Length: 140
Figure 1 (spheres, one colour):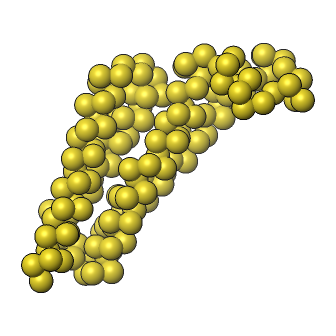
Figure 2 (tube, helix red, strand yellow; figure 1 turned 90 degrees about the vertical axis):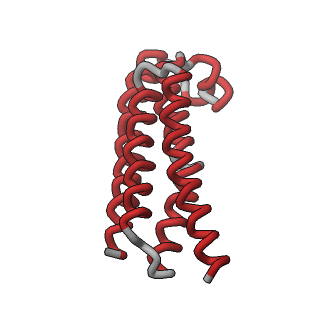
Figure 3 (spheres, rainbow, N blue to C red; figure 1 turned 120 degrees about the vertical axis):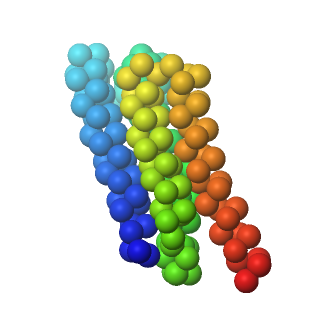
């Protein structure tokens, strides 16, 4: 069962790859159409000219290197400590499913309150994992 914790980790990595590809699929045609000379295309200029629906995948990709980093560390900690069980696996999959939904919302409709609700559920699943592991470590 311990190695089962790597499946949600891989699912998160695949999500990151999907968003990365989607970001380029949105951004490259936009930049080609904008026809801005390379020497004028600075990060500030890119931010200035990019509409929200083009910027959203890039913003989401940045999000995938925030809370998910803690998730990856938590999964490795659980594996090393031989603490993986069905409860942790369930929480890990909740985290992953809601991060997929969050990314889908962020990269498409981008309704902030809906996105926040999805983010909140995923974060609560992660914090549950962290606090449960901390309690188990302190009480052992």
